[in-house]
Length: 197
Length: 197
Image (tube, rainbow over all chains, first blue to last red; front, side):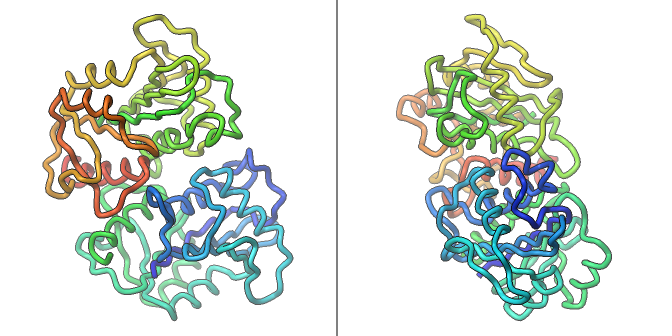
């Protein structure tokens, strides 16, 4: 399995945002929505071997985590608007203090924080922190079931980095330029398609 | 300069589509809009060394070509809706039979067909056809001023391929999977960032 964790520092956690305003009022939810596209879409199919955790940290009901499972997901289209709608439906669900609720096939929502997500995934595979000053992915031997962690348009906070460091992550970079989160996911997938198909 | 040509076989050529419906009523314009994002966005800047030609072949006023120039472009944001709006504004311009009209800074529109675009760009650099059965880009030495040609969700037609073949293009692939057009652009840029910065 390939796991991705994308952190949206100001991304809304309530379902009352407008689909026309995902870059503004929804706290740059557009960045996370594009991560859904790049995590799952092949030309004529969905990557079933991938799971994406969107950690939403903005708004009045933070934190929440929306998880997409490639194996089960349905009603997923590549455009931003329809994916935003799937996320909005998830954020409208009433949640228990612990555990996930399924909002649509392959889309789950919970009150998990960044720390909860990383702790849980650290039991499934090695944590890989995508960061500009990391080791070039071309010289990196990707472990089985890697958990790639990536931030939105701002870096992880010191507190978030401290959480990651507890799990002694590998730190990996994707080339000479600093790139958008969704673009990084494309490059990671391609590298793994070539080396660990 | 890095040139990209993306063909939208059913993409609308009139500005009367709804921004809420770019995947449906606008003839999969969403695919081309995502190509704009992946052609130009770095984390905190725009790729000035890139030009993108969107060849629109659907609707009542086909063909039209919308050209984005990274060196000049302004008002460009990464989300699909705002880029669709820039394209819609371009499609509302009254056009002469020949030549481009500027619709906003760095965005130009013309009545150029696919054949016109390829003929014109073939004078600027080598044509590189991105196709699944091509030579792996890792073993390909990218020429100066390459012109990468890519199709939307359907392959180039036989007629379009015949046009390309007149210019003896290199045929290049990007890995073991068939990918969305915008994802291909990300991979091409990364390869060139590493080899021809």
